[in-house]
Image 1 (cartoon, rainbow, N blue to C red):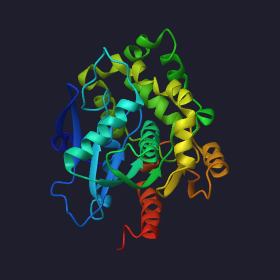
Image 2 (image 1 turned 120 degrees about the vertical axis):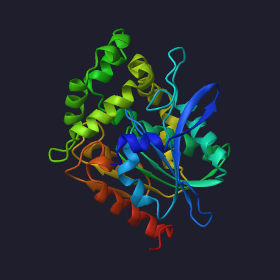
Image 3 (image 1 turned 180 degrees about the vertical axis):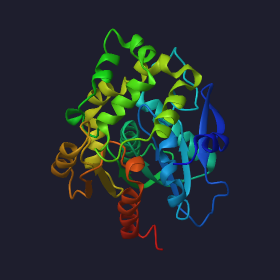
Image 4 (image 1 turned 45 degrees about the horizontal axis):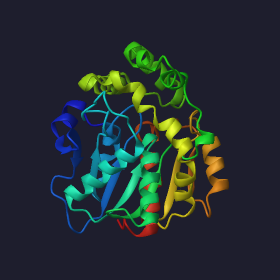
Length: 296
């Protein structure tokens, strides 16, 4: 992964609905290259994509932001966090960059944002055209999502205390439980994630960000329907050792989605793009070779 200090230096910012949003993009976008929008997961940030950034940049103009409540972006306490608002942010970023179409690469919490964007495309209300979408591990189907204990507690009446009682050691323990047996996060990665979670007093909103779990249930018909009716090509790249959205999700996806395109990385956990960036890039680039997006 790119050193966090270097990643921080590369951040740019824009204002959205009165909030300061951090984003990253290719320094000088090439009009001959397609745009790739990278959407991160919970509870981390766009820094997750830094292990793939240099591999992807020769083929795409890249765009990523830290969603509201995450990473270097603002983390207001007085709002209700919603996937719908996070999807609005993605549209605002691409509009700012002048991108009328983009491919998506999404993970965890970000898969749900991607599903909402696909639903908007189906409704013909999206401000840009989705050309394809690649999903990494995430709760594509709420009935298949196996929440961690800390997430369940965060949604309980104890929620406001959970984030404040979280420690670096507890974060590492939670990550160890969802990573592959041989691909655990390094001490440096844990330090970076912990630093970014604490940016702008972020632990105060940890429990508020978890609203996406019940929101997935309420919006299931729309968001699962977006997968089943998608006009854009889809691929799932799934880390099978993930207890949250692992092989059980891969199997269910293969049953529920028409003509499924899915790749199983059997010994990888919940963060395939940081655990096994070479394997993930190989599966991602094979998909885009098939589409003709990557030709080299």
